Image (cartoon, rainbow, N blue to C red; front, side, top):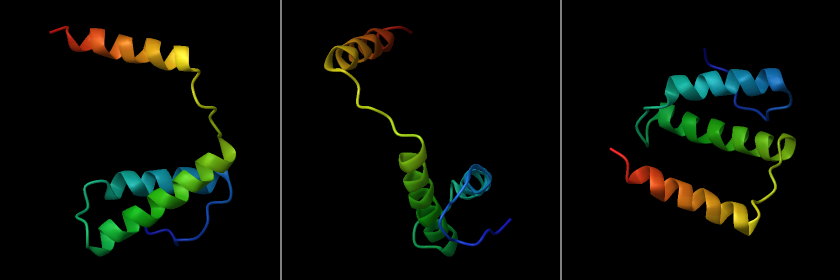
Length: 76
């Protein structure tokens, strides 16, 4: 499933790009597949930042999240 490397303009193209990224996930750097993975990842990141913006967490929420992560690390 080789899709053309162009900008991602809608949710359908975004979905196709995600499927292609999953297919290429373990590609070695410096190979054509690895290069394609890097380009697709950058295109998806740009699309997601433009279409699904996320506000940074409030400082108190970030602290709570970090504490939660630390407490989960202590479990077997």
